[in-house]
Length: 48
Image 1: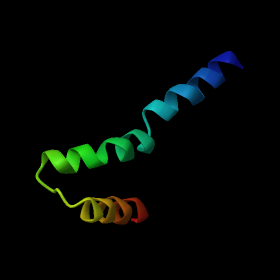
Image 2 (image 1 turned 120 degrees about the horizontal axis):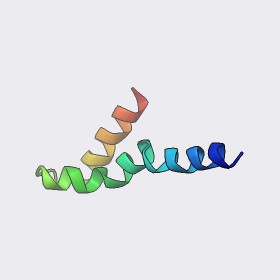
Image 3 (image 1 turned 135 degrees about the vertical axis):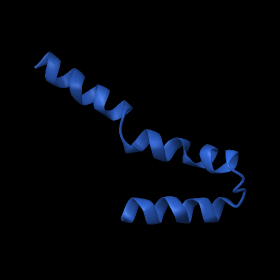
Image 4 (image 1 turned 180 degrees about the horizontal axis):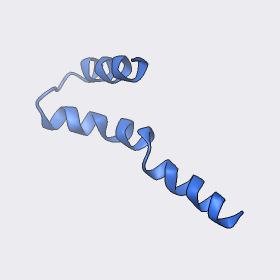
């Protein structure tokens, strides 16, 4: 049970939540300063 629980916790650190959390910084680094456009791109990608 402990190993299963730890796998569940560690999976949360490597999933899409981390990608979405840092997506605004990533878009800012590549030159997209419009937050609404960046959110739209992330939303469309997440939908597809």
